Image (cartoon, rainbow, N blue to C red; front, side, top):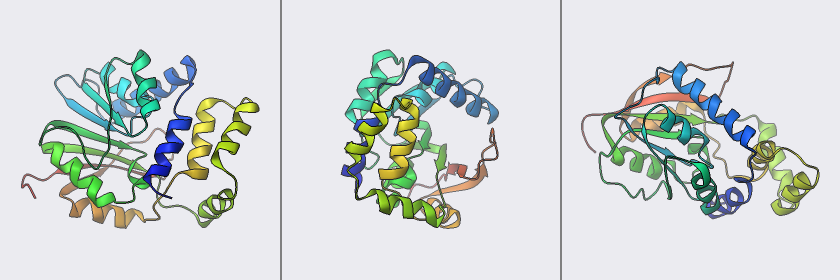
Length: 230
């Protein structure tokens, strides 16, 4: 699997959320941001990479940020633009269309573990962040062996067939998104320690764990961009 595969997958699943599903997801994002001290984001420029339908980007905007969301999936961006107030663009983490040192914060929610070349993506995040800027990282690592066993078994079933089965059985759209991501998206098998090492090698330091709303064991950290450009 590669990122072209992920693009095809996310174009399929990131749409048709109900208003309630979107509002609930945005409310959760607001709670996470406020829990970690982001109550007023005025005068902060924020890039949300892999923004999907914009539920986290809109939370940033509601808190006052100059928020921009980018995603490789055109349908996701089209969906975000329908009702979103933030700025949305089709874009790729490997070639971010903003000048150096443009953003105060870069958000990577559920993105890093999907990348084939994490280092290349992180270097672009480093480039567009201001000195002392913040990198917000949430990633699903590590995984139990059973996770990849399930993914191997699903390879024999075309993802379109699985998607249509879920739709035909009226599964909620946000649940379809979660399961399709687990079954078919590209994931990198990396430990938390190796991920921290990689992020540090790309010019970030001062790692700090995020405060969580639940006993979530996934990878959730803040990093600071070092003063010295690399």
